[in-house]
Length: 166
Image (cartoon, rainbow, N blue to C red):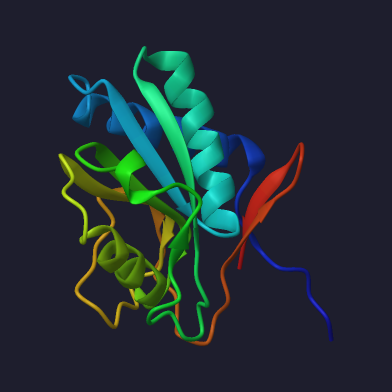
């Protein structure tokens, strides 16, 4: 028997979580002139784009968007960014991803940025599943879910509608 996935958060609820995270990022970086929001491709980058839009609406801080690309099955030495290291050097950087499962993508993303001096480095996650294999945490998170390892959590970003499904 096929059942439809359970909706954890609706479009409006996700918008509210993203807005709250954007305000937390702004409060943490209120004295900065520029923030780099780096999103892990694919959904982490969509999340980063949404954060950028809100941050530009609520502050005068320059927001630079960066896409982080990696092979999530084998992330060692596969991390690349859409901007040069000189463009985020000595700036405040937020690394964003949609779901924190094992922490593998996030830890390798963090590792990539540690080769460059930064003013501040924080992580933003929309869904924290608490199944980490690595000592990594979300500084800003939308929702924490207690799930089993066998359950699948997915963030669906559409043009006009998005949801978190389980």
